Length: 315
Image 1 (tube, one colour):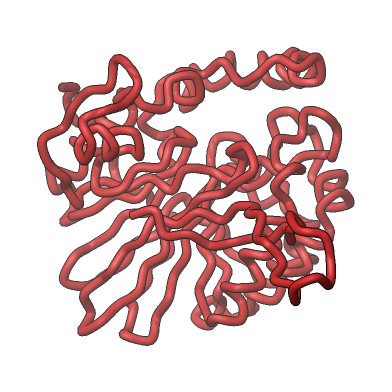
Image 2 (cartoon, rainbow, N blue to C red):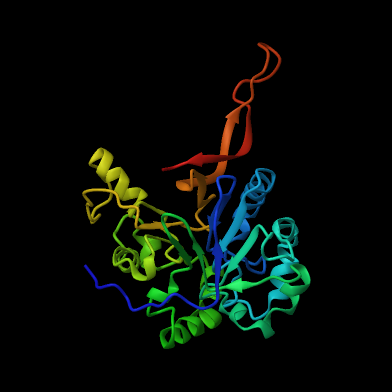
């Protein structure tokens, strides 16, 4: 078990004090790109758009928890915006120039760290007047939540180590993707194994630094609910799962991870609602699903289906 990583809550943070009417959805790791073969978000853009429509109509606040734009592979935001204009049109409906009223909260990650410097965001300012971009968000209440991307606990993606990773992604990774090479990262190749980064975030939350009781992060692309990945939950419930899974004895509300929006054919996130100031969290998935079309007997061929986008609660 690794020691809690040294980390201080950043100055540039968004503070939220939720009420019982507050609804929040947290998603991360969209990696919106330029629409070429290296754009990992493109195949899920319609699913994401349908999810935004639901959350817009249902009065959710949308927290974008880092790596929304793929600015390691792409040097400029303009082409990303041109490719995914319809997505940004939806996001604009969540935004309000008044930071106290906005329902669009944007956190930067390592792949869109450019937003840390305000001189890099003139086009964002045009799209979202008065937008503030933060390194983290704090949900205040009886339990305090820290929401951040999570790369701050990953030495390969934070500080000096990030320069090597960025150089590889900028100059080589896009070409490999276009040749059909899949993501070789440990979390993607081994979705059931305990991840060292998950453990660092969990241990930091358990140490109760700065009064934080729960951490919600992204970055690993692996959904985690109450400190258990989906494969770990299957192992706990059924006793079956891929080889090498670290069996955990019980759940723990100190750590959650949103997963990502670049899974094959689905996106994941975490919804938070409140009752008597007490939060309820749900890990959700949005994905395509084939549903049979009900037809009067004899009116059409059997085996006809509609392809729909469906929200499913995973945990």
